[in-house]
Image 1 (tube, rainbow, N blue to C red):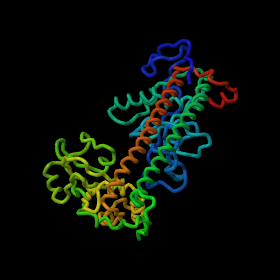
Image 2: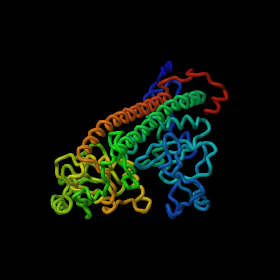
Image 3: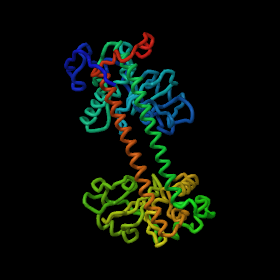
Length: 454
């Protein structure tokens, strides 16, 4: 959409934004709000949460797209009374002021029930002489995000205080222009968000297709006409007649986990891999932890990973596989286990089996039986595996290498599309709320619509 600019601009007198339409002004947040404050942690902390009661909003509930309440906490009426000064109201703007989510913001919708916030969320109550919806959009703009980044970096920590928030500046057009900008952004951002949603659905479908392709190949093979038989294993169902099915322990030479001791991290030592290190496509040697050679040598007497072995996460994010494809020496933490295969199983075929729904089902069944998300070695050794002939394992691996790469490219393209759409959304919001574009004649406006937008 191509939109005109205003006829004349002036220097804003502030760093963000640097210029404005000639008739616009600048106000500090503390001059356009009757309240800038946060809540607190209830006496007793999370122990005071109840199953039903007053909504208690935390930073994980506040997103630029709106409130997410799927994991919202609740507090009792008595605790809410104790924290009455931090209650929020419809049309308050909520801003995350600490941690990794700092800067995320949203408006409390009309009709929202009684609610409170904790100390990580600031509530801003806008005065009636400005449009709260315009200010809510402004808090999603690049100028505000930039001010927040500058303030938190200047303080050397991830956190904002009320004085800093109050000193942040906002561009102020006329009240009618605020309403026009709100209407414009409501419509145009909704269109962009719909496109983002379509790409997210596509990514979900591609991920499902990826796992279905892997699962079918490692349990049914590549020949659709091959005779089938009952594997005798609930998680496998039917497999090709000439295949076997057995416990993982019958296909391995060793299954052992990593360091049980508390490692000593050093700047220059032996790479020490954890779950986070094997979860991404590449291993960044500049970011991983390292341990002294003496600790590595002590650990290698029991756990000696080599090229061609398979690593599997057994704590935290469990079930993540990674074939060792590198030659450098390393050790692993206790959250990983090392699997060395015998001649009946190719490591890369096992890698794809671990990515299949058959292993996922076995892991989920184990999780349901325990409150601790932890795969013990004996459970891993007991996983039921399909066992094709080695030459067929190789053919399946080659097929899946091609198919998963093709699907990964499509997923990557969809993710890039989402990133570009988000950049476009951010740029559009920032341009509109700072007057870089003039949206007043972008559409016909009914008086009632303008009043509602304010």
